[in-house]
Length: 85
View 1: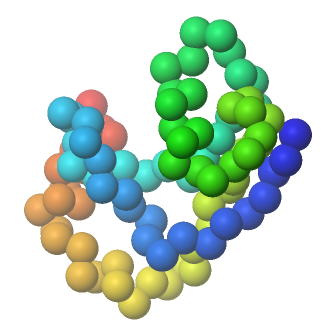
View 2 (view 1 turned 135 degrees about the vertical axis):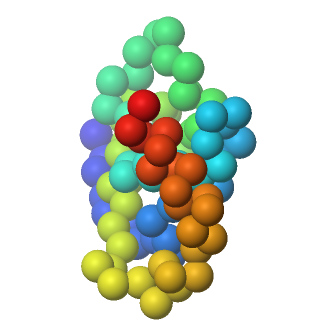
């Protein structure tokens, strides 16, 4: 199992989900490799040679981001409202 920290530029990620424009995903990968996994297709976006279920990248970002205030407040509110459902 490979676990490593990766620094990301932003806390929020653009999402194509019908319920949210943005999402917060604190890690990429998986430690379980369940046969019925719906997210195993995500491996193609990781540049990992290891099979799905054998790596986890934990995302880190600085506590204060200069670009965070530039996020559209309306998008942020929609995201927070979805979390509150």
